Image 1 (cartoon, rainbow, N blue to C red):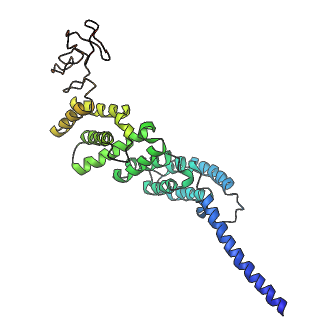
Image 2: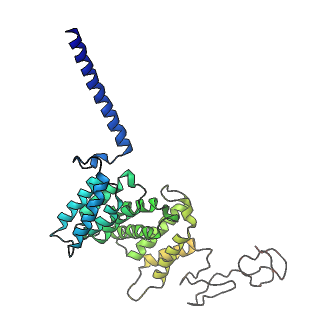
Image 3: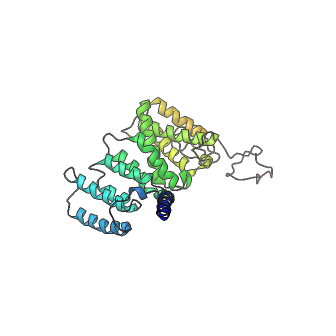
Amino acid sequence: MKSNVIHILIIIVAVVAGGLLGKNLQTKQMELSPTRETLSKLPLGGFHKFLADVEWMLFVNYLGSLNTVNDDNVKQVTGRLKKLMSYDPNLPKIYQEGAAMISIADPQETVKILDAACQNPTLKNNSQIPFYAGFVMVQHMTPPNYKDAIPYFKMAIERSGGKDQGNAYYTSYYYRAKAKELAKDKNIDDRHALLQVLYDEWDAAALNSRGDVPSSEFNSQDMKERMLQVVRSIKNPSEDYKPTEAAVKLADEVTKKVFSDAHLCHNCTAAYGPGDKYCSVCGTEIQVYGLCPFCGGVHESGVKYCPKTGKKMP
């Protein structure tokens, strides 16, 4: 009798200890593999990745049998994608290639799938996935959802190295999405809005007053080139665009503040050389530079001493 009680106690202790150990192991497994809970619950014996590769080949063959993905078959295609995700949620081509197949027929579902991938810590260094999520929102949704696309473009930029070293294509979409949203909110045209967005980011970086903009962007050549292109499109508009007075005023301000050392005509933004008094493109009087204050001679930029007088240039 006594031995039976001891055996029962041992069994109870073993069950409790096993439960605690199992719970601890599950916690450790989740730390090592955060996406484990999303895996298929089918008894696949740990062959999830192998089955994902097989299912991907079947998926590609299935797509080859379709003329196009449309309202009639998009649910079936989406179902196959989700099945792939249940086998291996860390497989990048599910999102980079597979999600593209349904992006036109069902952009909302596409963004849901891509958003899940953006939150996947295993794919945290993948910049293409968040960029494509934003791309789908501005290119395939009706109407385009610029506001919600902005964080995805920003995530793509950060994952690709930041605004200075990152993918310029991502950065272009980020600025244009912000400009589209600003144009809608302020009821201004797209060029005016884009210049305002670029100028605000440059100004914030210059003052180092905003933490999400790297201070190095103040001197970013890419940023200045973007602003100069927009300034010139406002100052020298095409026949199909008539800038507002507010847009022209902003372009003037940017020219004077951002390009003060670039020697650009404030009227047409054409570059001019040392000693020039008038713009050779539009004839506007310009601020002369490169003159020696002692002899009046014209010297190129970078000259430290006047070759005629030997005196140090200011």
